[in-house]
Image (cartoon, rainbow, N blue to C red; front, side):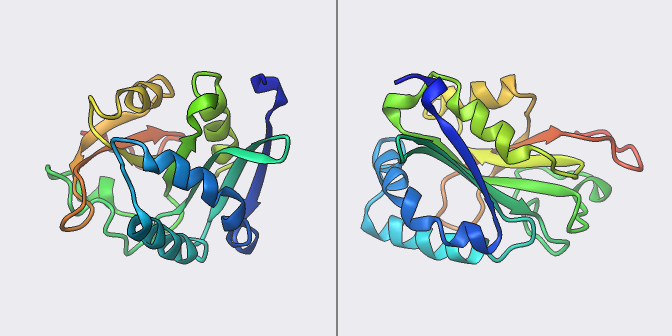
Length: 193
């Protein structure tokens, strides 16, 4: 099994909603591992969120498969103009930087590869396929802080993301590092803090 044996398939909108069952076993396997240690209630919550996410503008899912088996996946969508994405950061950022238009920022919600397929460039290929042809200024994501997610943090930094602060998306949620990747210069230049 080599990374050359991997196929990448992209689905958008309603087509992404139809693919949940194909990648759910991979999700369950990956997120059962530490540091996540997810159980049945976490999986049920993920399914609920995914169904809602598939209705978001710009929703896109990419699956990495080998011999018909999903070995990795990633998905995300456009941040709406009324998003709360930036409100729980541990630091203040300029309003012109956090202002969303519904077409400015694309959020990566999940990016995961099964353990036996890691370190083969599959995550990078999934990420590239996910962002291919996006017409946005920037991409954002959250990742658990080091050391629990050191490999993911290193990969995101190597792909050009940089930290803009720590965030706890909702009460009781883990604290994450919020990261941003600039894709295009905004119409009015505002330095990222």
